[in-house]
Image (cartoon, rainbow, N blue to C red; front, side, top):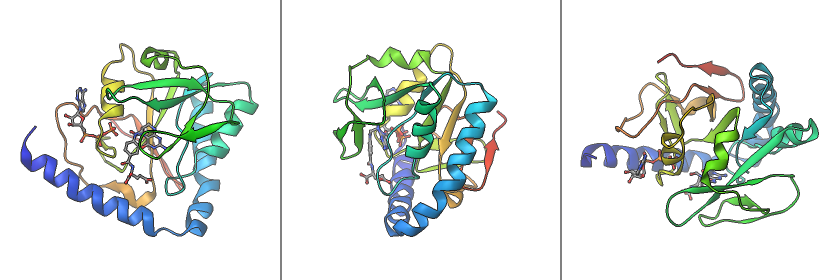
Amino acid sequence: MTADVTDTKRALRAELRERRRTRTSKQVEEATEGLTRNLVAVAETYGARTIASYLSSPTEPNTRPFLNWAVAGGRRVLLPIGRTDGLLDWTEGDGESETEGLHGVPEAVGEILGPIAINDADLIVVPASAVDGRGIRMGWGRGYFDRTLGSMERCPPVFALVYDDEILDEVPREVHDAPVDGAVTPTRIVRFTH
Ligand SMILES: Nc1nc2c(c(=O)[nH]1)N(C=O)[C@@H](CNc1ccc(C(=O)N[C@@H](CCC(=O)O)C(=O)O)cc1)CN2
Ligand SMILES: Nc1ncnc2c1ncn2[C@@H]1O[C@H](COP(=O)(O)OP(=O)(O)OP(=O)(O)O)[C@@H](O)[C@H]1O
């Protein structure tokens, strides 16, 4: 990868991270209702029975009401566990037990399913620091989801969960960055064409 893109991404991530840190818990709370409604609408559109998502940290858009809705409706929810080799294991979330994972983010506790468990998903909701109008997504710089999505044979719809001001005009793209199909924000469901 070129030094240019790496540096640009790093600087942009730092800015986006800072913006998330300065969002008040009241703002995060106010965003939750809309983004939950939008996530539910996306899951219903695809009739998703197995959903891969993640447990949000306090600064991230809140995934928990959506996960609770999915579990209550008898859907299978797969939640990621970061591995030191850069891959993600998965476990079935029941919304009950959690612990702090490798990078300080919450992780579900349960039977460890290997990286290929993601192949069962009918819908994948991924974390992101930003996406652009082409669906190019930037994460938090560890490549977990790039690697995970890049390894899938048949990829179901992938939606990034971001705040409205994290949909940018342009996100720097590298070869391994596969575009996502859409983004969910507190006010919008955006679909990208590529
Ligand atoms: N909630 C959550 N779970 C997740 C991720 C994630 O981004 N969020 N991951 C995604 O790959 C994987 C774990 N890897 C991670 C890698 C880096 C950072 C990270 O650098 N986070 C920022 C803070 C982001 C925020 O809280 O808004 C940081 O530490 O500054 C987090 C998780 C799997 N589970
Ligand atoms: N498919 C892949 N195979 C191997 N390495 C990869 C792959 N995708 C990304 N990487 C590596 O992971 C690191 C982070 O990549 P990048 O900056 O694109 O992360 P990101 O989009 O923020 O991460 P994430 O996917 O975790 O949200 C880079 O060093 C990159 O080379």
